[in-house]
Length: 456
Image (cartoon, rainbow, N blue to C red; front, side, top):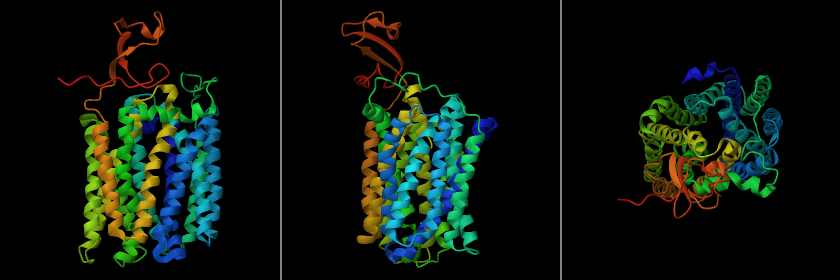
């Protein structure tokens, strides 16, 4: 996995990602403690609303920004987003009201909605080989997981010396360091003139919705959204209600909050380390579907366990459950880039990654408020039961939507192309049009997915 770091440009981009993630992780812990200081037992509701605002920024702004910035070079886009995030993070230590949290979170995540899709679309350009790209995806997931483990541990150590408001300074430093590393990297000249990347005749609405139309026309990508919803239900429970489970339900101290979040990261780390080899042997579908069902089952079990009085077994059980949630999320989210890359033409990758970023966060937009508002209003068992039901329905939908087998090369018929079109060079005429087979993606020549062959 680490061999991909021999590529100098990717190494600098990956380092920028890691440093920014550590800063963001410190802010996550500090924001939880800030919300508890402001709202007390209603901290879960505050965090749920704040994270819902984050998802609204992601869902609403990513396609719009992608359509507006589709001709901009990636370097100023990435550096500008980092500088905006650093500036907003400077204001977080001075928050005294809940509404101020909401405003700053929206501004911070609007910048992230610019940065992340542009970063994701750049990596296939930097690492064009499939094997290198797969390793980069696993390494990127490992970075997220290590952040979940390292940042809470670092926060726990720092909190013994400083107040949590100073943790936001680490966020500012992380974003500034990320911007400096992006500036120092030799980025490729991305050709935006390739098919699908820059259409002078396409209107703003067509550019903004192109990636979403690609997603909804591709069966495996529709299934990916359902899988994302299933693991988002578990992840939202961890991110929103950990502070409530640890402080109120179990009656444990502040220092145990980072430990619980660290267990979530540890489960994801161990999974990410194994994934490159597992994906080579097993394939995406056979790993991702069971992970979604695992997340659903664990949430339903958590709903039952939350009704029982806390005992000596409760704390270790919560740590184990959080680790499994992390493993399930890693099993689904790590191969996501592979599915997107496989399902889009090279020129459509920026639009496809922007759509994936937006639509997947729509899943979190549903999960975060359910976890926060139901947890605060109806109790932790009701929240876990509702989210478990959502996850189970999403897992069942994904199994139905994702065909098995799912080959890349598909036979299909063209009815709207005339004889002599370059795309028909290897096609043969049939009674319904021109028939041929190739690696199939939705693009300007292929608007619908071919029907599944009839079962024998």
